[in-house]
Length: 439
Ligand SMILES: Cc1cc2nc3c(=O)[nH]c(=O)nc-3n(C[C@H](O)[C@H](O)[C@H](O)COP(=O)(O)O)c2cc1C
Image 1: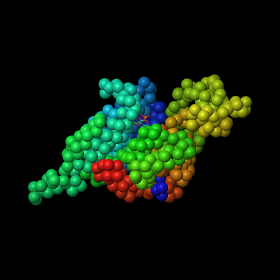
Image 2: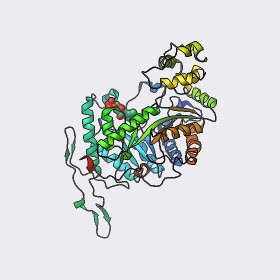
Image 3: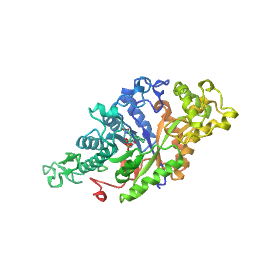
Image 4: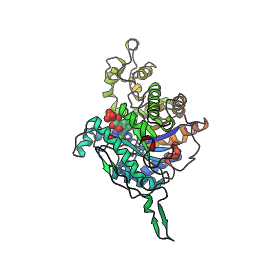
């Protein structure tokens, strides 16, 4: 367990993590394509000493894009290239598919970003699961087993390419006229069932040697991937118990692969709407996403075992409803939803608490977010958090200026970056080329 927690932030759509972020007052409605804004938000996160930005990627238009811009980003590598040149310390993790790209292209782009950023790049290696993405590549989704077989080959080939120049192969010696020591640049010559490469990659090592590997997503196969290669895991967990179980499973998977479990840092998601008090935060949340509450009331009912009607949105549950309510075992968020409902909030306010969001949600003052993080971290449920602020423009500053100082005062978060690279920030061990323990 590291002594202090680590922070990442989801990044890339130009607006924030809530569906209505793009419509909020003071938000540039064209933020989607505004790189000055993106760099400004990255700098804000860097002012908060966050260890990394995390860029998801789903390269297919979503059916809800008519009203919702959350899933959009221009393109991860181009975006992070701009961010790399506008920031100095923060790490940047981009998602790259092992299903629909070629290892040589991906190795080259990520190494280029790593060189450009002086060792701050990370790769979230994901198999693609969305048929709409597959269709964009003119292909069908391969069967799951094949997808993961390809993923293992892919990561090993990429790491082989990354390590194909000896650490000291690049001489750039103007006196002698020797640019590179060709005896220290080796071919890769890896051949798998799905992929192969001869190599070498014509790029020297970066300040951190090579990018750091991240993994996102669960299941037994995902666990094996993380156990073998990942330094960071982007988790999706609703309860502390769930987070503890996932972190423990990851640590066991790392041990199975012959690694030290402390080499993997597990990040739990945390969504935030920060305001001076609960009422102000709920109102902010209603202004932002309240338009989506009416259609969700039926689902809220299913979560707590009641048939609920939109006509009750501004009323709390009645005593009879409360007596009959039961959390649904089908949805891990149900017990929390019922707890909030039983506090007497109107159903609109219950939904504004984010009880149907895809991570735990803080809707309240900065200290509540700090308390949540402290509780989970001290229970060893995670090594840190990936933060999803509701809106970057005015929802990120309270994280940086209010939440982070509380964590720092409590000794839970670093005061400044100690090292220069993402590997330093994560305290990930040095690695160059493939991991010899896995060969
Ligand atoms: C928190 C989290 C973030 C993810 N981010 C991405 C992403 O950005 N792009 C993507 O294609 N898949 C992403 N995934 C999906 C996973 O990579 C994986 O495809 C999914 O969990 C299904 O895994 P399976 O094929 O083993 O069932 C993410 C998953 C989780 C849990």
